Image (tube, rainbow, N blue to C red; front, side, top):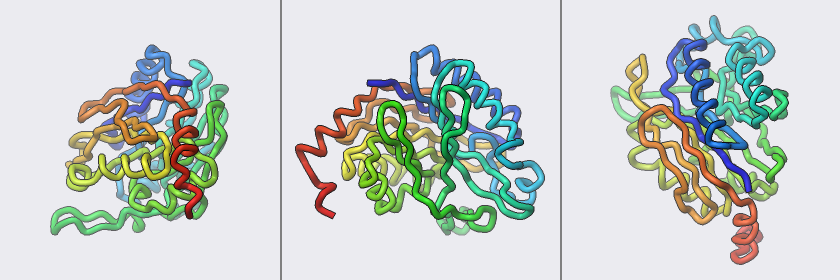
Length: 265
């Protein structure tokens, strides 16, 4: 058994401000006796403006937010997954990267978002992430002290084959840090997350951005921790905050033994 916490933010375009907010919520999670803390997508800087991001974002080595979170992980001796940072990997190239930090403050692995959110929801609401970010091409898992975790980000959620691969690789836990739009979140967020949990018999940890941001964009919030049988263990609706739940890895294993659907592919 271990305890996991999902942080919900309403990030803006000020990295120092976002780090300060995250720090306070990490301290709150620590008081809830958590073992593993996860932040949402684009925790450090909320923007799709590539020119702005190229001026502000840096390599992982120099990233202010990442270095701040590494210090907190070491100070409180907690595993922390930064849901995502925007990392500059060359002069004109950015990636949306999830970064896993161990309790000594060391980066253990990272995952670059594979599926870019290129959608035309209405005349007023359009998003084209591929204009700002380069997609990743590697499926990533990591062996935590409590079992294997599979890493994904937001729009990846709509591609079930990715999650099947992660489950087949032995993942008991799936992370889905997100900044889901209000429009699609109301219709699909809960259903998609519960489906990924049930069809793979995995815990799903989904910290989210929530509320109306500085640039007018509305994110859905509703951070969730879901059990392998689809039960919502914890949920936070709109406000910034933290939710924490106990996780039993044996539940995933037992369900897979009783209903061996993963063997059917």
